[in-house]
Image (cartoon, rainbow, N blue to C red; front, side):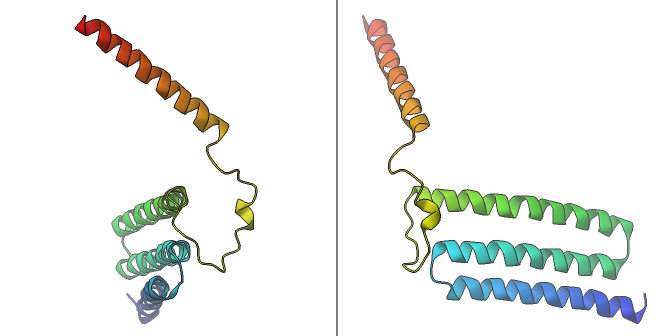
Length: 140
């Protein structure tokens, strides 16, 4: 291994650590849940990519390269997806936004359940009635 490879891998790891530090500062400094979620998701994902790239460069091994690709793919696929689901769940349970948040994207949304949700609720109520009737028949 030559000095240039060591320096380059060290720079990658350092850059990843800096991005992780920015992510940690974002958790402490940003005003609301949604901003914090965004900071953690984006910076930590890119930070992991840089750290894994530094490790792959440092060890210069096919096994490490394959494992590194697997780690990066797993993190790159799961982190944004889980953040999206967590964000949607937070909206669903009415986690408050920061007062200065531009909520114009939510103006189109109707209040209350959608037609699909109403339809599913009606089907659920129908199934509950059928189960109650079946129980009554079983007792008699």
